Length: 402
Ligand SMILES: Cc1cc2nc3c(=O)[nH]c(=O)nc-3n(C[C@H](O)[C@H](O)[C@H](O)COP(=O)(O)OP(=O)(O)OC[C@H]3O[C@@H](n4cnc5c(N)ncnc54)[C@H](O)[C@@H]3O)c2cc1C
Image 1 (spheres, rainbow, N blue to C red):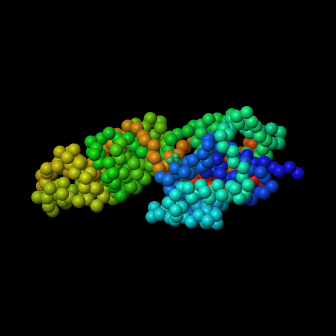
Image 2: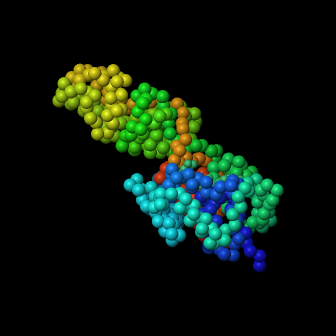
Image 3: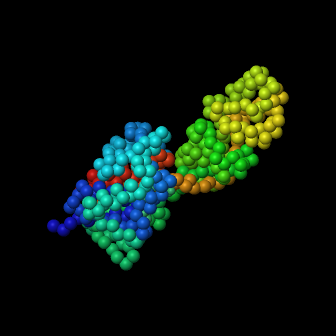
């Protein structure tokens, strides 16, 4: 009997992990990866600033699903089958030790994404995966019982096709051409552009915890925040950009944010606090007050911008106290654009999850066609969740095939 054929389209994270595991579990299948570029696992290489945040230290599926703005609860069952702990075990079994950082991001102990690439290349070699680069697939066509996959002036037949071309809009069109429902691409995980004197010259100033809301929406996040050369970044901004990906695109990345720099206060309690300070130490210069949550450089700049730099607490009138309380708990900033977050960015959108059975990642309309990774309308916030979605899909496909 002739050997069955699996063609994996895309030599990125999801395609590679699927290929390795299909080949390892099913020696009766010949597995070939077709990659359009010269480079395999290109995004893995640059991921996590070159360190590859390979997964996350959280293990409970119920907790993990909260980190996927698109995908969410539907990932509960897949993550229960092959979650973060299973991925770490897989890597350990292949000789890659991992470590968990304080914020629960997991990296290879080597701090180098090359460790993951070397591991995958070795595993592919061991299980006999055939790798072909410079093969840009331009058509996949269902035939009577098999699939025809075409690239350049060649075409191959396959019993099963794993489609894992990441965020390539052109490749998504191949699937849309088969009638699969496509959710339009929208950037996720980006930072905010702001041109505001209150943050000018303060690049690098970090807030350990701040609350941030998008005015006129329900979008709200809290967490560390960082002033950059061009605006604001940090986990709170990135999370907001991921959850608000569609809404913020509709606003053409022009919107107003409200920032609470004093996480455990509202405007009224901040006013009370300032009044107490005025009563307790009227002679103290306002700029000499040290806040737990507000870095001194920001406070000084804010006072400068509000004309209060030379004032003592005793000088402050009701209006000025209210203004400061507002600036500390509901500071309004106009966002005028977005920037790519260089450590990690992903695309929301892709093939609608209703098109696949998440028990197998197989297309409901096209048996034998499997979809994985960013091709699907699944994306997570930063923290290793995006790669984990790829590993989970790749593993489940390897279990389902055959
Ligand atoms: C700078 C950066 C850093 C990141 N860091 C992290 C991180 O630390 N942790 C994390 O969890 N996530 C991270 N991400 C997100 C993560 O890289 C992606 O979610 C993940 O790579 C998606 O995997 P994928 O296999 O779906 O797509 P990709 O990794 O993009 O792979 C798709 C592959 O398909 C190929 N391809 C496309 N079209 C065709 C075609 N027609 N024919 C053949 N091949 C084709 C592409 O060339 C590519 O090699 C980062 C992303 C970026 C951009």
